[in-house]
Amino acid sequence: MIFLRWFAALCGVLGVVAPLWATTVVPPDFSQLVNESDYVVRARVTAVTAERVTREGRPAIFTRIELEILEIIAGNPPARPVLVMLGGRIGDDEMWVEGAPRFAVGDEDVLFVVGNGRYLHPLYALGHGRYRIARDAAGREFVTRSNGVPLEDVAEISLPLSDGSAATLQRRARTGATALAPAQFAASIRALRQPAARREK
Image 1: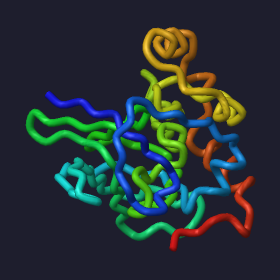
Image 2: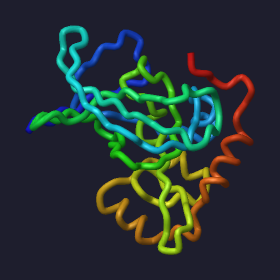
Image 3: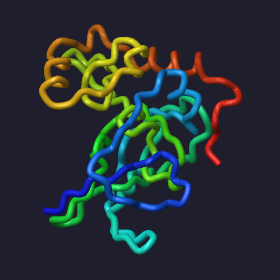
Image 4: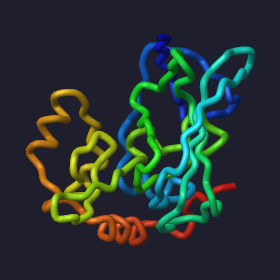
């Protein structure tokens, strides 16, 4: 199995894919996340398809994530968005961007999309641009960060995303009862979105 870590630089100026051993992502604050994204949607994943692509003479695997929009929170998304991101699995070959979330059919998330099709990854600051919708035993919906840790306050968005045992401990220490509900999260986004915020071109 081939594992390559690629740098998903959110500049995408030349569309060059260059392999590196690690990626460094600076967590955005909530205002950056909201106002520098092209659009923000609550969506469900309907299909995940990986394909081999050659760019600048370099082979790579890209994945297409087809979405069903459940709610438009900010911006002007296409009716049926298809996110294109570096990384994926085909047979025994797997290429992945360190720190980038992986998707499966049925996932439901609030997504902050920027530069889809132009950058190597379409989510703002990789995992910082994905907020999963979870449900507790009683069926109450709540928001988690991409590492599964319940989001209790939008101020937490500027904190690094923990992984491994640290994330496991955080998940155990919190419950959905204290986390933001999707409607609360969406209201906070709309309240902060500025008229001059980025729009998808």
